[in-house]
Length: 290
Image (tube, rainbow, N blue to C red; front, top):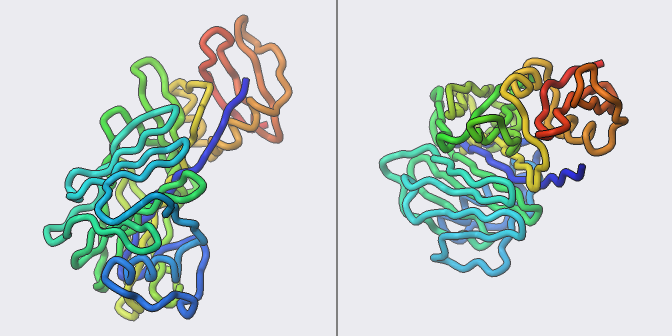
């Protein structure tokens, strides 16, 4: 059974900046306009990210990748749509009354500027990052509402697993990595996720001594070409036992296969992960650690 994975990233940015790694502020090029300034604020504190810019020009609303297509509307209230070779779904971004229409920065970042900027980036690795830039020292909450066909499970490490619900079982779509937030100096800012239905909320506690802007960054890594499905029970067990979708994929793709205790099932073992699969439907029944 071959399973192909690829990446998509979703991030949120405040007037402080959240990130997994830091690029020194001094490396940023001088801003030429509002959209470029926002893109540079993200790049100065966010993890290294190669923004796809080939074939994109100002005014275009859709960014295409080889395996992932991301539609970014002129108006922020319309949300973005993400289409991979395994699933299609929408994502409503945080909204603020004063956000302007989409503008394209020189590096390929799409920015909806306002008192709180929202930025969308598509990576050369088929990933997508959404950042929120904030300019005040209050506790802020940002809601990311996925389509009604999406089911979210929060993992022990703070990350969130994303599945498409077919009505019978679940198709793994990707993972929102544990949240981060950093101010303009690269100092970490307290942040966390909460899940309610298909809505992911990031809370960021911006201290009074933060250097602005602050960037808060939920990071969504999508899965492309997934060849298996997951029962709701298995999805909840994966989250409760803090087992990543990548570990489940590795067990099925590279693990040792043995007959299961029940007829018509197989067990795939890789490292410390055991995955029980229904041989007829290819649906994952449960996942455990050894």
